[in-house]
Amino acid sequence: MATTPERRLTESGIEVKPVYGPEDASGPAEEPGEFPFTRGPYPDMYRGRPWTMRQYAGFGSADETNARFRTLLSRGQTGLSVAFDLPTQLGYDSDDPAAEGEVGRTGVAIDSVEDMARLTAGIPLGEVSTSMTINAPAALLLLCYELAAAEQGVPGEALRGTVQNDILKEYVARGNYIFPPRPSMRLTTDLFAYCAERIPKWNTISISGYHIREAGSTAAQELAFTLANGIAYCQAAVAAGLSPDDFGAHLSFFFNAHNDVLQEVAKFRAARRLWAGIMRGRFGATSPRAQALRFHAQTGGSTLTAQQPENNLVRIAAQALSAIYGGAQSIHTNGFDEALALPTERSATLALRTQQVLMHEAGPTATADPLGGSWYVESLTDELERLATELIERIDDLGGAVAAIEAGWMQGQIEESAYRWQREVESGDRVIVGVNRFTTDEPERVELHRLDPEIERAQRARTQALRASRDATAVESAVAEVRRVAGSGENLLPALREALGARATIGELCGALRELWGTYDAS
Image 1 (spheres, one colour):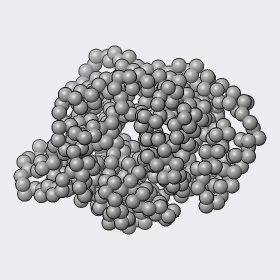
Image 2 (cartoon, helix red, strand yellow; image 1 turned 90 degrees about the vertical axis):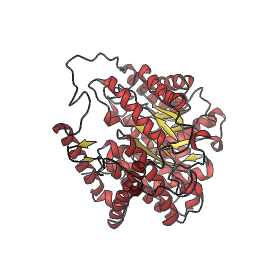
Image 3 (cartoon, helix red, strand yellow; image 1 turned 90 degrees about the horizontal axis):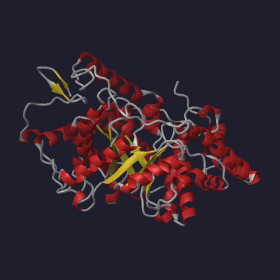
Image 4 (cartoon, helix red, strand yellow; image 1 turned 180 degrees about the vertical axis):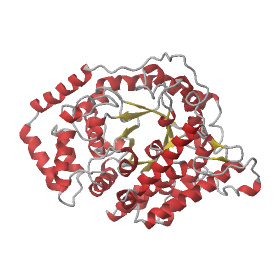
């Protein structure tokens, strides 16, 4: 929170009074589990369904990440979350020259169904829910997961999890896009329809504010831009002939849990209230499951500091508590060393233990919406709802989220907020402990994760061996069918599944679509 002697403001610009009273907020009238779900999507919240501890992990090859997953599961983690390396996220195989030096560096390298099978080996996919942070090639990675599960004997109907599949925020904040927005939206809605038929328990999109906040947005902007993107996906799904009650039940959201604990709690409450009104008012959804916003939260990576990194343990715990009091359905807590490197096994375990201590020792599961009725929290909830509504109306005036992104409006708003935050840090108006106050000259001694360069060489060799061993004629025919379907109005995922089953690679299929659709150039 930025402060002066006279005024205190949240980073969304909300002025904070010294004391709040009953005149500042009326408070929600509904019970938890009732429209508009301000107090939570379920009547008894964590008493009946504790949040899922879903630690995000991925590095090196499928074998190394599989070992980390097994370790986390053995230590009490209750769901998987896959981080993919940059080449995979951008649709390049590990042996592509563009991938050199990046294979396995920021996540796991997955080039084919065989890599996915190694990633999930020994993990019962019919029992564990899996989240995959993948966007531009999301359909391909989900199909690889479906095929790998089939090899385990697990049908698509039994699979549970979420694929991020939120391409709009890539144009706004993160930058890991491949194709232009409109063909990318086609892939998104094709995945909606495919999962409704073949993987009905799967959440087909995780509409993500997390990366918008990481890029420097305020809490109000994170809320507004995320929901505006959600509106665009719903409009595209309706245009494709899908029912809001059907696809709406499989939407999920992904928010940042940042430092200002009570503002974050209010943000999550306002998000549920706003989305329920959007689904009912704009799209005519009548199913409570389609109206109720469910979300995953991750603690704020951009808040972690390389200076005095053990301070990050406190930041992470406070941020996780905001997500818990805000009613998250699943949570990832960052490793304290992530400003310096990928987390070590020790720091990943400490991050998991943070959630376990909060769940079992801090008492947050006893009652639903424990901060509901606080005059300050209710006032913040109302104010964030108001600010986000104004921003959504501005986006509507610009022609919707896709048009606002194409015009660079959302990006410009985030850049202004990020610049303002940085100026406050540099001036000392915003205190960052260990960075601009309470500093020390003592060297930090922290064990860091080191990536073995042999992993990249081995991954390239595996992909080349796959190409040498497969039926080249079958692959060529399957890729040709992908090109044909991509130029038609048919759902593209069945053709992609057949090509992946023939052992076409992620990079080959993305390359075929690049030739047809082109690539997006932000400049």
